[in-house]
Image (cartoon, rainbow, N blue to C red):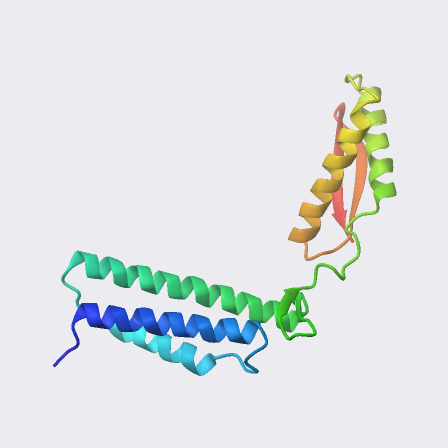
Length: 177
């Protein structure tokens, strides 16, 4: 006889928790290989159960929730493994997977940010826009924060700013190097 929907959902929930545990062990260095066999089995179970008719709305909602959680985890695991293979993540001495952020150089030189902020103030003056010498600290911090965002989006590359005046307005352009 076919398994009851609630029993099937309880089993899927346990299986998902076990798979998540296996991936946690893998990313913490306690397991040598990625649990691909277990992951494939979970995908197969979800596919088979998705073809089954679930009459009770609460059970259907629970199945959809479990399926969505699995696919969210699957995307996360795939991204983390890819980052590990491509060098954006690494294993520390204990075997734990970590982002490689501490070993990277700064995305922009502070002196370059200072020069860009001063050039932007000068461009504002040349356009007749109000500018105050006290604005320089705020401009520096804004440019530096923006450089961090751009560098992160660009894969950790260095950022350089170019200041120009176009149609009577000062413009700041960021270039990845």
